[in-house]
Structures are given as structure tokens and as C-alpha cells.
Amino acid sequence: MAWFKKARKPIAPSDGKASRVPEGLWVKCPGCSQVIYNKDLAANLNVCPTPPCAHHFRLSAAERLRMLFDGDWTEHDRSLTSTDPLNFTDTKAYKARLKAGAAATGLKDAVIVASGAIDRIETVVAAMEYEFIGGSMGVVVGEKIARGIERAIERRTPIVIVCCSGGARMMEGALSLMQMAKVCGALARLDRARVPYISVLTDPTTGGVTASFAMLGDLNIAEPKALIGFAGPRVIEQTIRQKLPAGFQRSEFLLEKGMLDLIVDRREMKATIAGALRFMGATQAAASPVAAMDEAVAET
Ligand SMILES: [Zn+2]
Image (cartoon, rainbow, N blue to C red; front, top):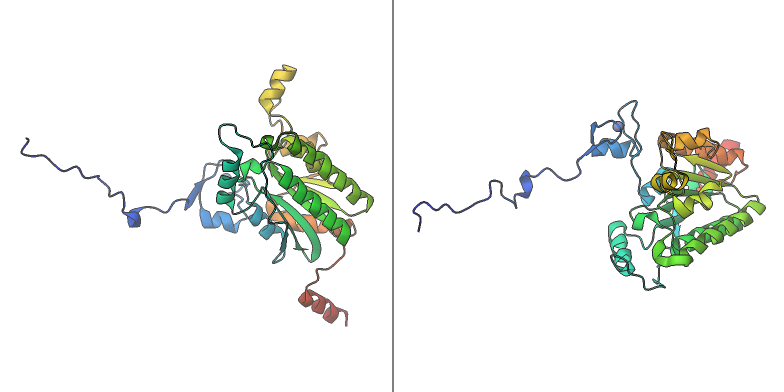
């Protein structure tokens, strides 16, 4: 037995929580490599504040609603959940994926549909949540969006859909693909009712979402440098056997090719949407008694 056997102690105490820098206090910007204080980023709607970078970090669905609505909103169909109709398992059971998604986001599926006021215009907004299985569209997402559109028709209020999705949810097979037709059918009725629809495409908007409602807005507005496409670049290169041009499938490229109407910085998004809705004839002031009183006072 050795005389000088030293009890091995870790150099830094592993349980010394006080000495540890809190996680996620700083973020490195993928656009300009600057290190940004998290609070500064949040105060800037998750857009890199270093000029001229303005990298748009992803927003959660709830943050998106907070950014667009004047104040509180009413959420619709919150309790809808997938029944896992195919009892599907790939590397993991679909049920387990649903559970993990719910734990990560506090939502039951990958979209929040709510009504509220955008600059005092009563509007239905559907915001997709990427953290829930890649924002994929299954039966629940399709149903919630379709109901949101129906609500917009009924009340004659415009609808804004903020897309952020990897496409159709393969774990629900053909049922997920049917959502494309269902939502598009509802949008056609909305169009016949002459109620405005604005599609906001954010990073990423791909697959079945691009191939259906994302591209059907009366206005299709994208955030800068968002990835927008149907199939991924590798699949396309292999299919057409050609090298793809630089910036392919980014907002700026798509705007140049006429696939989008506008690219708008997130910090201008709310004002742009409100302006466009007014231009399209949306005049309904929100049913807030305070706003109504303000108007009454202004009129007299
Ligand atoms: Zn940056």
C-alpha cells in the first residue's frame, strides 16, 4: 500500500453551482460570429443587433404571437392532440416524440392558433413551432389551421399564418399529406369570401408546407435569408445533375425569381402586416372597450 495515496478530488467541484456561468447567457451569432448578450437579443426580437448583420434567430410560436399582437390573445383548439393513428415507430416511437415535443414546448402540437389584434385590426394568427418535431404538419396542425381559416371566414377577420416547418409529418403517413389539400380547400373558401390572408415565411419553410398554404397568401412575406424550398438542395442536385447557384432556396433568391412578394426585417414585420391588411380593406378595430372609447373621444 502506498504511503502517499492522495484521495482524488475533482479540480473544480462538480456541484459548485454558484461558480458556474448560467447556461445560455451569451449566444454566438452564426451570421457575424459576434457574442451577444441574451437579453439584448431578446429585446431586439431575436435579431442580431450588430450592424449590418441582422441575423434572424428562430422565434418560438409564443414569441411570434407576442411580437404580432397588441396585447393578449385568445388561443383556439389548444387541446387537440395526435392519436398516432399508424402506431408508428422509426428510430423512436412516435408517441415518445410527441411526448418529448410537448415537454420541450408546453404545446400539444406544432402550431398555436389564436385571435387578437394586430395594430387594432382583429386578426387570426397561426404560428408554427419548430421545436415540436421540426414544426411538421400532421393531422392536428392541419386541423387547427383549417379551423383557424374557418373562424376567419365566419368573423370576416383576416388571417396571418407564420410558417416554420420541415414539411409534412411522415409519422402520420398519407394522413399528413391530406392536410395540404384540406388547408388549401379552406383557403380557397377564404378567398371566395374575400377575406385577406398573409403568409409569413420564416427559416425554415420546406416540404409540404411550402407546397401548400405557405405560397398561397394574398401576400407572401419572408424574413431575410430564410431557407424556403420544397426538397433539399442535395436531392435536387442529384435529380437534375446540375450544380445549384449560390443562395439557392434563400428568401433573396426567391424574391428575385418572383416566388415572394416581399422580404421584411422582423422588426418591421408587424407594421408591414398591419399596413398591408389596411390596404386590403381590413378595418375592424379590435373589440377592446378602451380602443372603442379612444375612437369615440377622437370623433367628438
Ligand atoms: Zn450577427
